[in-house]
Length: 30
Image 1 (tube, rainbow, N blue to C red):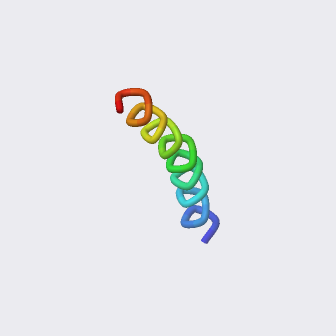
Image 2 (image 1 turned 90 degrees about the horizontal axis):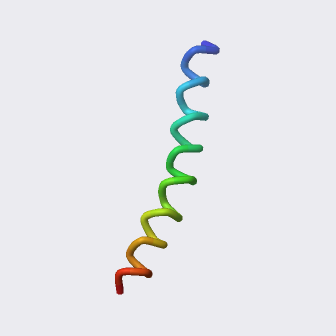
Image 3 (image 1 turned 180 degrees about the vertical axis):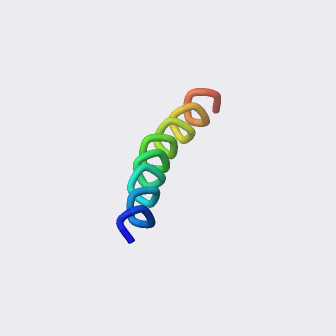
């Protein structure tokens, strides 16, 4: 049960860190 909750945390962190980076890249290229 603890294993299932573990993968959700890193995934959320990756999305939170990747989203702003992708948005920033697009803003700079625009």
